[in-house]
Image 1 (cartoon, rainbow over the protein chains, first blue to last red):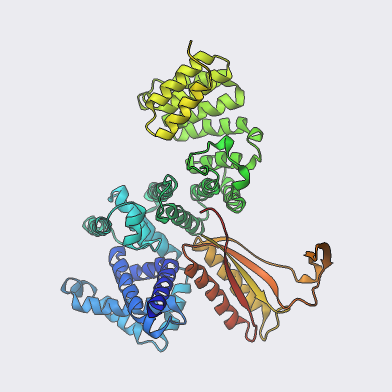
Image 2: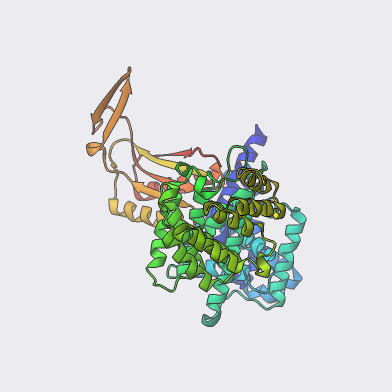
Length: 427
Length: 120
């Protein structure tokens, strides 16, 4: 019984932490001018909550309690730790003075209610700093800006807790060595730094999105963590179309998660998905974000364009109603801003759907010999598709068989062989 | 996981204090949920004067127009939030109830936290 109660309180601590930690860390980081240290100080407060709340009950204002406790613990830690003492003595004195306020809880609550958007942004920019590896950026972002514990990050990335803990420690050290302080990027590097942030959020989403099977819900939940980060960024940077584009793109992709695999876990291609399983609420939220992004003009970036393509699919209540001409045009624009072989291949598919398989085949053949696509099974699969629609059955079968031979994933291999088989025997 | 939080109270809002205070506080709260990235949808609902109900009772389908005099309580609005856990949704509900306690003294209100079933 006691165990159950403790467990319940632990989950409440986690819940409050998840909702409030980013703000607590942001306020602390402003105080100590260091995200890494702020994150550690905030974690101390969680340890205190886990000790005290099961005994004393959940405080009336849990977030403010964590804030006040984090500051008290910060003072203790600065006084105790010789390395911190010199550098942060003044900070400790300031925090101590604040702690002696008449109603520290009310003061902390006011602090958390203040507009700390700028600080929240800085946390994300530091966590996604280019001096860090991509893995380190993702881990530190999830820890400092999304309220995940080290254990949760480890489970989500199918790795050990100590590996993640080390990764985070090293990331903080790297930030310190590189002299990264708690500052917003300067105006001329802002765009590049923002791209890095958006990339990290998108990678976190994809890490969860590509996870299929398994009983552990942590991986799919990464999608939600990424969506949360993206939503928060749209509020912090309301006039950045690419931020809105990313948020919209994630909403559209997530809206299909219930329809994209069948009961056996086999992937269901977009045209065959049961569209009634698409999530209308997420589609609506995505459309609203995309609409706001479009209001900023024609020079759309890759996320806005990808979201616009996803929106075309979302708008079609049946696969036959898909506006492929529009999608083809959007892919041409996407290829111009993000010239990649995979985008070029998708563009060929769209042109094939919009203007007939001859046009699609022409475009596939133009890019098929690119080094990046030489061993890519989907090139052959797309060729097969176009050839089949043109009635060139034997060539289509060869293409599907060639694609199957190159595919790594056994499910995809099986699907491609079935398609080849459906076109009759070779002789 | 997604949760529907139904805001339930008995009869129209009746409390001491300025309704625009509560209105403003709730507006800020919804903005905060959006800024935290967990809001999927939220709205208030019209009073039941103009509502209708379609009932199935004893094998008979009947349309009943509002207001529903016999109803003990009614839903005044809702939130849909995307959360990691039920505790997190409960914390959102608690914060909203707390705002009602502060800005609408005397107002009795229930926030019902219900997980939305889906295949996640």
